[in-house]
Image (cartoon, rainbow, N blue to C red):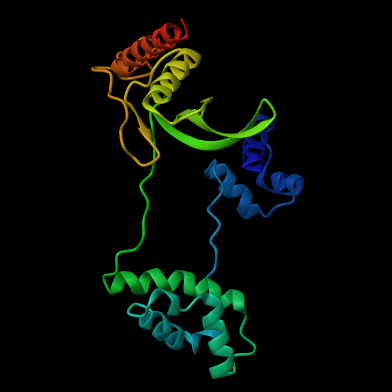
Length: 244
């Protein structure tokens, strides 16, 4: 691309001939003519490589892959197993494993699609900035007064930026769950505009009505936030009462 731009510039500024441009850049005059006619170089064509040693064994490999459609999962052929059978049963000692592996990788989904087998797929995740979050607890062991104690790590993670807030609690109770949200909202400076879910996929918070982006003071989880503050305050008052 840079050479094509240089050829076109020299032809325009210095008014050089095709022969002079070919000598300057040490290319064929056909390349110079193409550069003057088009600013982008032609797409390089990759020739189809012949595999004469594999061509005679392709029907055998296809038969193995076709039989795998009805075979139990643990009895299906891997590329390594296909290569081993070709060597043992067909004396394909001159055949490369990498050639067999590449062919199996191409033919397996083609044979499955021809037989109507639904291939495993995935759902792309594209959360909006500040839109979604994930919440979870995990067990952690900490030293408390010299004693190894099991605690629970609360994690609130934004799906888009992966920014997370962590808090350690003695239990996984509802109080810790709500208080963890309050702490996360305070640290992040807002709430997700859509929802927050647990790792099991259950939605643990609602969505802000009409919100389309990160909401620094939005109504998402306002019920959880209010309930958390009330629950924390009431329990703190109860503790103070018992102590008194």
